[in-house]
Image (cartoon, helix red, strand yellow):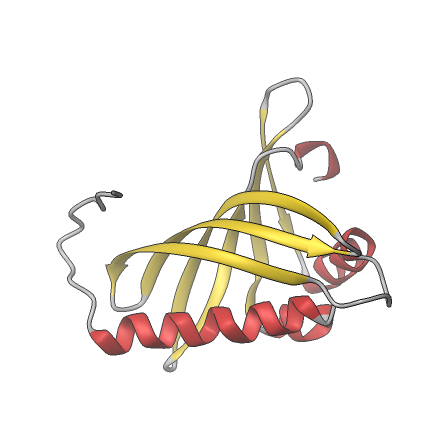
Length: 142
């Protein structure tokens, strides 16, 4: 069982439903490798946090062009769709901020890969957008 930290804010059913809907849209864009639509769901400059092969923490800020170029390279183009089976644990800091921890299995071209990452999302004008991506192992590419 996962125990969430007490943040002082108790999310409403609508908070959780809107966040779930955002992730469903993002996952659908990811499955189609539609990196431009993925970028539409972000706030730029986008913060990235990772670690490198030397074991040091790394961070960077990407603009939209860098996000699109890097994600297009990482995800590849064409081929069969990518599928995700994800379990998400959101921690709402307020009605407009959430840290979401994700455990996921990605399947691409019959190959499965286990992923664990966190995103920081903000809500503006009633819509969620990711602003920070946190995942180990990508620091050499930042």
